[in-house]
Length: 334
Image (cartoon, rainbow, N blue to C red):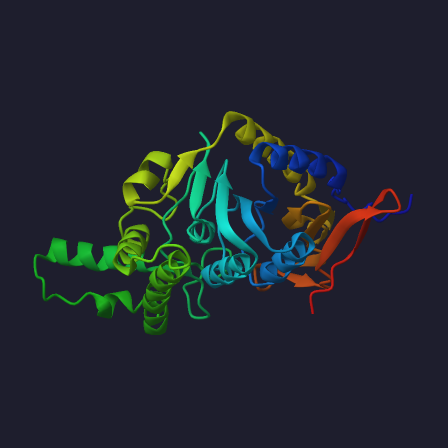
């Protein structure tokens, strides 16, 4: 018997199904809709700005627009760029949040004039953690994320337990976390606050109020993933309202379809080699859908105790109706 190469798992492109739900949602909302969806392995990144631009160009400038967001976060700088881009095409922006909209996705939502949240919706704190080239290494030999909140808590606990305000814990801390990492985390925390203020400024002209909201989101919650529900969002001072039941139901249906598209599409060849074709990010509007599909080999280097990627052909793709059928092509971004 000869070994056969496994057939690669390929995720479905369900463009016709998603378009039906989007058409129904636009009828309910009375305005155009754009969706921004990340799988569990996707994140907000700079390339998403170009993907969003491709969808916005197909719609053109409009007075009002709704943006559905489902994401656990990513890069805050990309959120600022996406808000800036949206504001070139729309006067009044509403963000729809039926599920998680966390970290950098919360930053993205701050750019809306109004946020509509469903019963399952949550925003989150936006305090920044980062993986530095000099970060500590975990048991899998990967660099770990370090946050400003974690470092501040270590210093505070050290001083509380020593009973001396002047006691300096940094000599011991430097044995585990490189000084440059601590400096980079402090800089990232300042960046996070600045990004929130800048994003809010697109619709909130009260600079002091924008700073208060930004400081609250960056420093007032005990964990990065602390769930900010609609009640807490109102307390912070965000312009939030409940999602209509019909709209919320349609968005949850849309999320189910996207989840099927974003299912794990990794094919194992053996215990050390696999290939991944998973769809990570989806941006869609009427008549057009763009999505980022990972297309790479993974190899486990036992001597380094880590996975490395090879033959990376990952790219953005575009789905649209061509001659009455769904056509998928490479979406050229550069």
